[in-house]
Length: 534
Image (cartoon, rainbow, N blue to C red; front, side):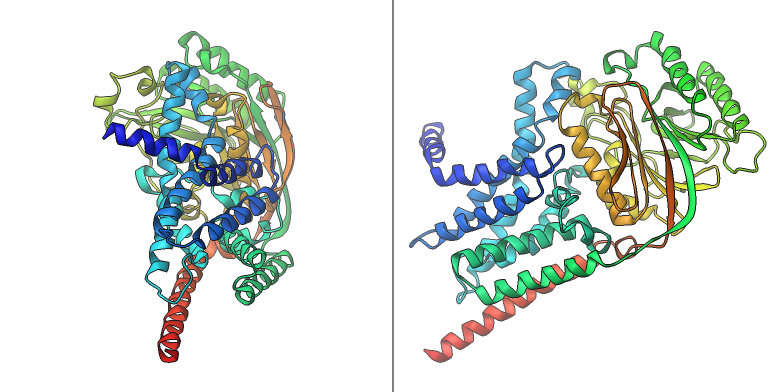
């Protein structure tokens, strides 16, 4: 078996057509932050579709096998370049050698490539059942891609990173986000590129023209819409970036110096009404007596200065014996309060729901933990908070919080979004990923959430990217990475709801399945016409 595998592998490596698919996927990384060349996606996808169409026009080609193989290679190139930052945390903080970290990253890329592979396989398989259609019916691909991207976001807790729509946050399709969300942008991008490839090949030009015109009209319409409006109220905020090195963050002797650093930086910025500390800014368990002593001091200090502090902290529930990655509110819950409202056990808090595999919980931990330090990272035994939780109350503001990885899941944000939610808040500790493009992609995802839900967004991190975006997803202020700094700015509050915040992904699911139905019916009509002609 192994002997027969080697010649096949050698043939695939020497296959220039596969290399073209690999390069098409590889180039997609430049459409995302920090590069943000949004037009790269249009070029790479269109040329890839042209490449596939030409391959499938050859005689005696197994379309299903060809499209499945090329989709896998395309997907592998896409993720190999896009999430190359994963190995940084494995190598630097997981206690594994570079070879092992690269191997694990390779396995992750191979796994993620299965989802575009499934999209390619189903596209070819469905097209094969339609006798009168061409060998390759790429019109099916955008709708099927919706399904496989949904699966990528839920299977094994989900990893919806690098979805194609994120690369368009600064592109012409961005105004579609408040209507159909990031996934809808992905769908429109694929439809556009399929149509463009048809025009290049002078095939199905009528359908291609209709598709391109439809997307142009919808995009033009979205550019002219205003879904939310300013209330006239502003709030001054201060985001504290402590820049604590990950290697010393959890050392016991560093707890008080770290907490006092945040408090000292905060005291210099008490003219701000809302002060944000990052994820696990307090590197101690909330229930510890020394931690309670510090929290009481910070709570009273903020209240005396008419301010509110929101900070990340670790909590332990003695009754359930569970650990939580949490956010708590110190200082004033309402402006009229005389004293700070914090006390241990109060409900003005948020417990992280969507945990990061390996980093925050270890599946099959009893089996994996003895294997390598990677599976014994600090704080890798958290429990989940509730999926739906109340917004945080801070100085008369309703703040919708998400911690780190959760910002990549719009459904979770939607479940906690209300018409009176004033601000979106996400905190993180991207020090795990060093000076890679991971933190920039993370910020890009946060920008998309602000645009989809029409709310300003605050993002406070330990080492960056710490930034503020307006309700259009535009970064209004940002501080440099890997510096101890404080970002202060005025946030303009808005009111109203975007269509996406009300209806979520249902409209794009309806459109996607409708197009599949129309396509199948159209080809059945063609089949009957062909039979009648014969």
